[in-house]
Image (cartoon, rainbow, N blue to C red; front, top):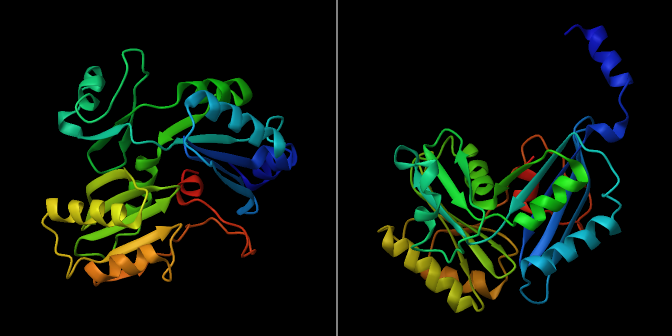
Length: 278
């Protein structure tokens, strides 16, 4: 494509058509991000935490209200991505993966129904497949609004995003993302995904139990492994202080969002997976 042709294409498109939308849905909350791919900036981001866990029908109602409130239902986007955040998933080594056996990969550690729709994501360049249960009613609604779109599991986005930042790491690292009473644990070792798992916790003691249990199962020493917490957690939180008693090499992880430029407003918050999905 010549430079002249490129300029003509830009002139014939509205600014609206260069916007991308990512939405993360879970039974505990919603978030979205509108990204301008021309100015390389985030236009709008919003996060909502529910007071109690919803069912998929209530979740759809909340999503409709959110998209209407921020006038996203009538806009056009060059790309729409939906991220499903739930614990209905399982990782399968790619050499062992068979697309016809999706239910068998999940039935031993996840409660699934006979009519559940199953999906899978291939984790780029890491010979791993994430099999999961998406919220079908959400997907149907998004298709009605925007037509063709992409959907992924949050574990896929989390693993791929963290793996991209592992160019210099030579020892195992444990990342824990905290949001809406859910902890997502990702352990990487020399640019390889060792584990991704997700737990629901209600107290800081719950959090510590799941963390120590995971490290013990993988025979990782609490004296040496770097523990990087991020999301809804800070150094002065009781959760952080409790973990520090048992895991010495602990810190708050500040993610890099790559080419995405963040809003210059300290009051704005952004979800790690909702921006990295784009």
